[in-house]
Image 1 (cartoon, rainbow, N blue to C red):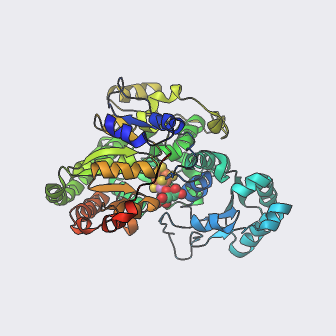
Image 2: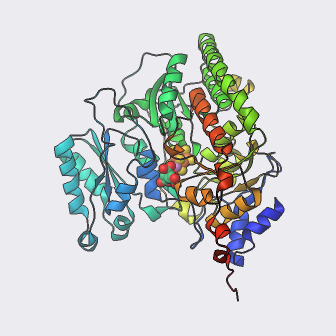
Image 3: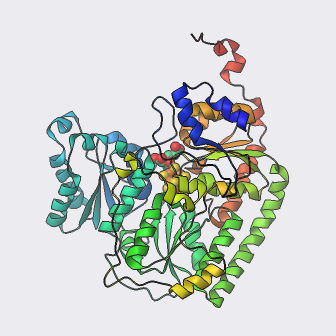
Length: 533
Ligand code: CFM
Ligand code: HCA
């Protein structure tokens, strides 16, 4: 691995190489010997990155899956258009007649005139027009790069229109360039949901075991699988942030007794703030992988310390595992020992490793696009993370216990008892502790580094997104999209695990890849080397 790392950076100018060397590490899974990784820092200009922008993280990712908040992009039409359902986030309104704005793309479609003379007037008109046609409960306004540059005050417009229309209207300062990646957009989205929506409806639920699922976005129908699974276990899902979600469920989510976090990167802020304000503890779960799904269900049941619930959960796990085993063992016999690489987002590069392990495949290299050090090394490094100017640019809310509604769900003694049984509150151990020693961990991988890695390792499968997919496949290596699932899924829960095993089996055992010749293999003249002075 040391030689591979050397190979990846040796072509870079020395300044670039110095930067990249901090973001490429050789793993050691033990906390004492774990290397520090550079993360959440600016991408070097000129490098082809996988990353997206702050607006994408806010409007596309966190608010994108909301069906009855009418989301208006204030900006040129491309931003709204590209963030319109390309993520394959699904939703299912309870009744045909219930609101679903996800099939629409709302935008102010800014033109040069609006840039020169200001776009606030146009934005107000757009909010009014949307209200007149759809009468939504809530409207979200999202800033794009030009809006930040010309200084339109989306919050003032939101306040004015909220007053005028009598519905909830709120804005997001999520200009694309605001942070170094999507990650900043997650934080901005979390802040505004917390300020403007969560806690607006106190109606209690009669059920005994009430949770929220945080950081589950219903890509390819994942949330539908989990809703069903939790229901069979007798666990009431108050709100999901934000797969198959509704505005009312968000407003009421503070009545739940536990926050279970799937994607730590995108939503840990809401979990932390809800604990501070309402006293709801949070735990990390992972419903990607059959073993992880079982473990996560057991963790939720253990939290409630209820024998009947634990028994029911065990029953469901046993039923599901029997189905999983039937498929898994056969597929494992064909996939055992093959290699995989995963370079995606801020959580899936970790979560999907479990699925590969379950069919005997080996992860030789993995990395996130925009996660922070805690997602790699675990939350124990949080106190040592340097807060740079880019992070300081994102508002950090100060939250205090609610004078009336703060209610710690567990007493100190109860927490202590659970901890002694090995139960972890507010913790995420990150990706590196679960990866093999000497495997490569690479943050914000560049296109050049991906190609080099593929040349060196020839992995059986490379997992990434749409921008990488066809470049990878032209090298004769199958690429599985872990963002959109390439039209497939669901991949969550036990049912999802079975779907994923089958898909990977098809990909890595197909002969087709061996027949592919890259253009330069057929026409060697294309490989002509450039003269470097
Ligand atoms: Fe969380 Fe996500 Fe991801 Fe993410 Fe994303 Fe996504 Fe992703 Mo694409 S919230 S960090 S910003 S799990 S959109 S559903 S697939 S990069 S790994
Ligand atoms: C985003 C969304 C994205 C992009 C996926 C891809 C998604 O980052 O804005 O590059 O294929 O999951 O849709 O992450």
